Image (cartoon, rainbow, N blue to C red):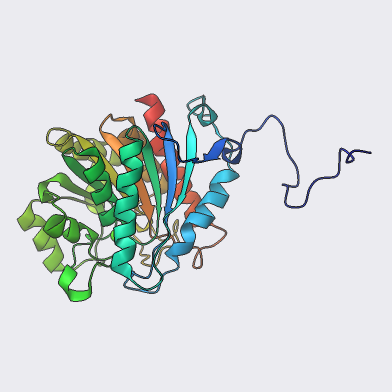
Length: 319
Ligand code: CA
């Protein structure tokens, strides 16, 4: 006798509606074949490099579990994202104690993956923000194109690398001083009062980093700022990497970030900026960092991160 029809397997969701497609139904693990297209999810579970205590290394797991259970249909645009190819590339395995080795593994893995799959658009889940420097450098090596970064963040992340090594306070300074990023090709959006030191703002100014504060977003609107950021870089670079520190959001919306503060961005502004950036041809990669599921409430911040990268992906369908 075969299994009775209403007896569900252990671990199966309580109710399965055959008309609703979820990302878990379309996200396929990478089999290692070359030439993969579409969007590739990769976890960078490193948070031992965080200045404050952080469980951000657990974020790839929580983000995946939220993502897999979300429906693929975007009703506002009438687009079903089940139709685009989705690949789960897996997580980079970190060294247990050697943080430089972990950073090297991120860079070399990004280089390898993007060399064999140059048309893939990576969606990278940190990890703390230190992972961005290594991921961007590996990606740049693979694509061999002049690159820029649009960083959405409450903080400059321009601390001196010599003071404490390559932590989550230093990724953009590390890129500028040791990994060949032209500081004029870095645009920071969402930088906030009482979260940064004057010295690092002065460093940004001296080096020619473009900075848009939260005040400018409130006064001019995120659409204007997003367009200015993109158009500034589009004149000078061949591809753009988008880095989203979830603490760019107001603390009310992202309780799972180690460095929360009021006065931040509204989620709709973040999503709107990412739809716009996604719709532009030069944006080729996105990362989402600084989500600590151990501090979070009901996976709220992981859910925000998923909505953020889905906004970027939606933009790619509209562009
Ligand atoms: Ca940051």
